[in-house]
Image 1 (cartoon, rainbow, N blue to C red):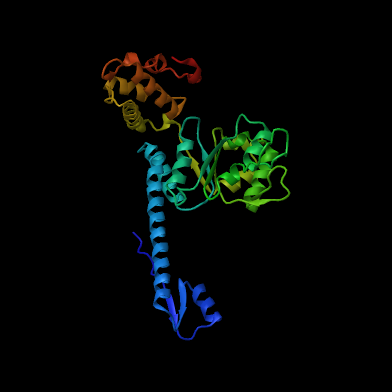
Image 2: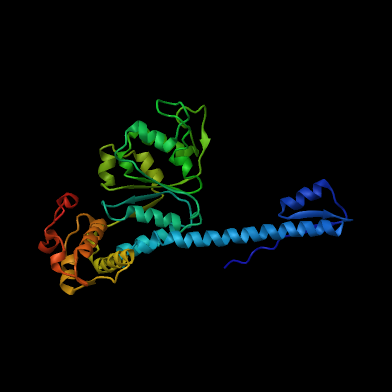
Length: 336
């Protein structure tokens, strides 16, 4: 751990306003001129000790928050495959700075977890993490959600709203499915990020913002750029760090680790002993293509653990599509 730097109290018999200002500029905690009363010095030292105590408590709290929140992110990113080792390395490095990050990966591959891990592993773990799913909102609603508005700016605006860019001040704004944002709104977002300020809807002028942005999308970046769903200038501004998450079918060696993790999670949640997974079941789980990726695997294991009446999850507890090895794209709707 880092050693705390010593605090300096300047004591001099040749005091002047100029020397006092210079001492404080150079980092002195306080400036005392002779002659002085002992109770004055005691008050100065007392204030200094209180300040240092508060700084220490704050540092300890930040460390605890970082470790606690880290468990909601990086410790839930399971995998020892070469692809996932690389992702974990990038998370570790990126969490030490505030560079923008662009995450690309199929639905259910863990983009939200990666974004949270970057935030909660970093120094700003005690600052806000604000997630916005850009799909499914009208342009007007999304603009208000991102940039904020003032009371009376439009019908229904009954109070001021900071907007996500300001709500995440000092922390991280995670924009999922960024390619669903209308291109004109993408241009406004880019300007806000480049200028470091945003003008809420109906406000007379801009306000400052201080936020790290992590953006993500499911589809091919190349296709999104080619078809105009993603502005090239916004993409290159956001991709200071680029993370590509592979589908689960391309990192099958991680499946047994994920299976054990989800089975244990289910057991801890329901305060029961973890269900055992036999070799035959693990083989079926490892052979299936998992079009819904890690999210589908978790859902299948939760369902199977809940349906199993014994201490083991057997082949009969798995959905038919997994047992048959068939790839069902609409897995969320099939329910089988």
